[in-house]
Figure (cartoon, rainbow, N blue to C red):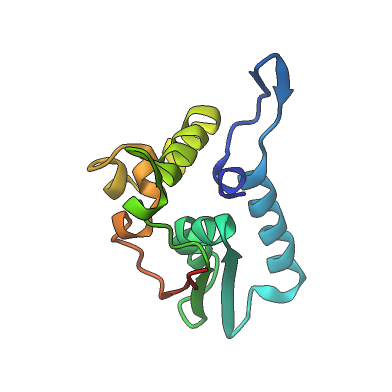
Length: 148
């Protein structure tokens, strides 16, 4: 899920009496480090892909992924099904369904420091999971989304 790739805290957190450990960002960084050491570093092309909530994470991690490669590497990102809209047709009553999900992510995981500052300076953190509010991604990114 998107929130795991944004989690940076090393300590456990209690939620409803349960111990939770969130290490997604650390796992992502460690995996990428190993892949770079095993031969990915001199790649001519690199593509970061995520689907659904992973597509949101790909969007939010895209520029960080780009920084791992030399300027001669063509780096792109693909968000497949991760372009969510806070559209009225997805509301339950007057409440946005997706916004309430992202509010829960923010409340549980507190990923604010991993969100783009250009977005959090204008919007609440949960609004930064909506691609239309993240305007400053420098790495080419493609969004693919099919309405069901």
